[in-house]
Image (cartoon, rainbow, N blue to C red; front, side, top):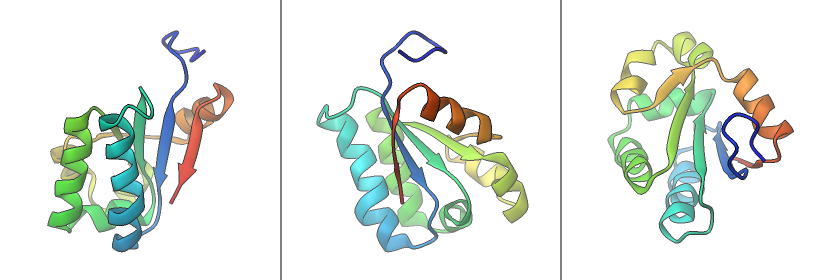
Length: 118
């Protein structure tokens, strides 16, 4: 069980690559479909590292993230990375929660969430 809210653990898609093809054809596609098709009840997308910079300036990636959020995926972005790239406001404007994410990732791992990193 997820210690924070008593729910069963879910899936975290840890998107770290700046490679837009990997983002479009794996990370974002899987996160969105995992929710839409009911493969996972709870899906969190964690934008970390170079993906934050890539997302901030790419309209197609932004549209795919919006589709993920609309499908019920919870979107988070690493504040330290976003600040390093100067994109915090842009990511917040896309509907992502921008916060320091080392502790949440550690909690996901300890609470039994499945983590796919791309």
